Length: 283
Image (cartoon, rainbow, N blue to C red):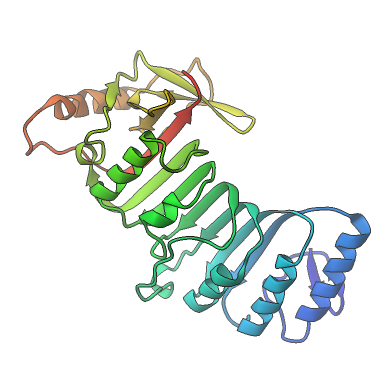
């Protein structure tokens, strides 16, 4: 639903004209007051002709709401408007999604954020991720994290996993999807984590994501100090039914990386860009 000429109309508006932002806020607030409903999702295009003043007015209105906001989706952004949103928005949400297709226009000039001013209760996703670092992830106690084009070194990833294993950070975490900017050495990432490489032909793990069950075949098993287990999926594929058989491609990959995993020869490398981890209360 969009908003034009002081009324809601069918279809989606992707831009606010300068004169209709205040009318939109008044009409939307009246709509919410009458129906007494929550906001399921708010989507933003944070780029001109949207102005700083318009965005500030919108953010201040959202911050003052007494009702819940389930999800905020930022579909495209310039850095100045994105930074304004991140620093001024203070309303806790269940989900925050950010996606910018044109990475070249999203230049944060080396500015790195270590925490947000609001809580993300369930799911945080960002693509790309030049605007935050490892400390930012430590300060985020959410259930799921999806971070693509993230510049984390093998040492960074190892520190993240070890901190989780020791129960220091990310206590609520259930699922991670990291895609690094370049390939990282898996053995360096898992160094000291006590990982056990599992055979996808014999090891199968059921993971519940919301109302959906999925199965992970094989992977690297690690354990937290309180006994909780996690599987790092090496094939990035979630099976939808328990009866599905592992593919020949996954078997061949397992046999290949098993030699590297068990080898003490430092010149043998197992490099990956994607690190998907599923955390279980029990297996």
